[in-house]
Structure formats: structure tokens, C-alpha cells
Length: 288
Ligand SMILES: NC(=O)c1ccc[n+]([C@@H]2O[C@H](COP(=O)([O-])OP(=O)(O)OC[C@H]3O[C@@H](n4cnc5c(N)ncnc54)[C@H](OP(=O)(O)O)[C@@H]3O)[C@@H](O)[C@H]2O)c1
Image (tube, rainbow, N blue to C red; front, top):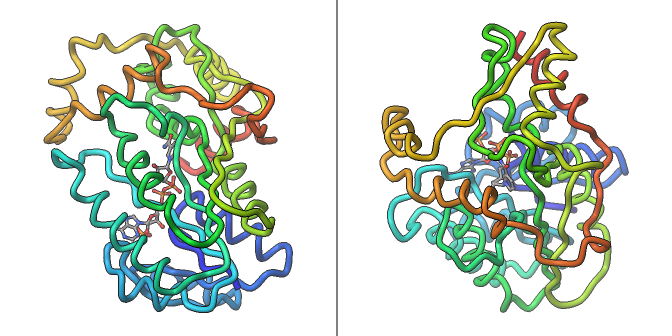
């Protein structure tokens, strides 16, 4: 049995669907059982646990041949990343106590970066889980193509999308969450020893201009993209309710300046199958 956290989200859902399709038993680890009803109806065992509660997490991981850890997203962390640290402490203690057969933990491209930024939350997770006694894989995917969900309305209604990724012709490693979940499920079923890192991107790299062009194709009208000047980010993010914009700004700097990048050799980076247009068409249809 595989215990899957984040199953009500995009990546965790794709992990569980892949395991189900292969006839593997899945235990859904959720904070709210109501949100896992569809998984229960599919025959999935459902247990409740909070990602920052070691006791409930240890019970949820007990008896699992493999565990998938999805660190909850936190886009506006307090200084020093206390939210991520609470999750890391609980996950670490729970895995030590429950001793599942193996662990796949979702991390990120650029987790090796030494500059503090939003992704430091995953750097800390990787550092903490490295001393676990069971085999651990850190899956480091590129930028999620689904981040373009924020651009659907502007592309459709104004024919103009804003880009924090710049310059507009710079190719960025991106990947569909369906590929992230599928690969995570495949990794969970492998045997390995010790700690390993697997880096993952989509079939080809994507520029902001590619995103605009794909939206134009889907909507059948011109879609342009323009950069959001870095000098406006702080005020903009604060106007949107963020308390601490700097970690997010430094993450964007990292992509734009190139210090958030894959660590391994190009030939070792796993390639996904789902292309940008497929993801954008799905996002457009979800937006209604
Ligand atoms: N966006 C990117 O470009 C990118 C790139 C690389 C890696 N990542 C990583 O991908 C992950 C996000 O994956 P996703 O897109 O699948 O996220 P998602 O669709 O937003 O789903 C988040 C999942 O986490 C659960 N969750 C959120 N907060 C929680 C909490 N406090 N306690 C327990 N569960 C909680 C949610 O459960 P509920 O249903 O209960 O809310 C949901 O199942 C993050 O770890 C992020 O660092 C993102």
C-alpha cells in the first residue's frame, strides 16, 4: 500500500491515479476527509492527518510500502520559513517512527540553490530527510505549466498576459503536473538505496512568448505578453495581500538570472510527455 499526501491536489491526484491504474492499493492522507470522498468511492482507504502533526502522520504512514510527501505550498512564508519547518519536523519524525519501505518527496528545480528564496523551503526539506534510514527520492520538477492558470482570463478577455519570467524569449524548464504525478508514482514503485535526486521537465522548454502563442492558438485571436517590471513587483505583490514578497521575488530572480536551474547533467533530466498546449487547453476548459 502506498500512502499519498496532497491527493486532493494536482500532483498528488496524478500520483494516486497512476498507482490505481496499475492496480496498486492507495491510502489517501488528507486533512479533511470530506474532500477525499471521490477517492473513498474509488475504493481508496482514507485517513486524516495534518502535515504539521507528527503523531497523526506517523499513524497515516504505518504499514506503507511507500509514502509520497507533498509539502504544502506556502507562497507568503513568514521570515525564517516557520510554516515549512513545522511540516519538515513533523514529516521527519513521522517517517522515522512509521518506517515505511521508501519515500518519494516532491521537491523543486533549484533546491540546491544557496540564495534564500521561496524554494528554500524545499532545500530545508531535502536537508532534513537525507538522514532517514529508508530509501528516499527527491523529485525536482521544473516550473509547473499549470501556473498559467492565472493567465487564462487575461489571455481570453484582453489578449495580453503579464510575465514575471523575463526576458520573454528565455526558455524555462516547465512540466505538466500530470507528468510530475505519473513520474512520482513510477519512482515509488522502483527499488533503490540511499538518497537520490530525480530532475524532471516537459518535452521541450517553454518561453513566455510560447505561452502567449499557445493561448492565441487556443482562443483564435492574438495574445501578446509583456514583462512586469521588477521595480513594481514589491508594491504589486503587497497590493495583492502578500506580507513578505521578497522570497517570491528572489525565486523569480533565480529563474530569470539562471541560478534556479537543474543541478544534474542535461542527459540525466527525465522528460515528461505532456506538452504546453495540452495543459493550456485543459486550463481553458476548466475556466469555463
Ligand atoms: N508551482 C510550481 O511551479 C512548482 C514547481 C515545483 C514544485 N512545486 C511544488 O508542488 C507542490 C504543489 O503541488 P500541487 O500543484 O499539486 O498543489 P495543489 O494542487 O495546490 O494541492 C495542494 C495539496 O496540498 C494539500 N495541502 C495544502 N495545505 C495543506 C496543509 N497545511 N496540510 C495538509 N495538506 C495541505 C491540499 O489539500 P486540501 O485539499 O485539503 O487543500 C492539496 O491536496 C508544492 O510543494 C510546490 O513546492 C511547485
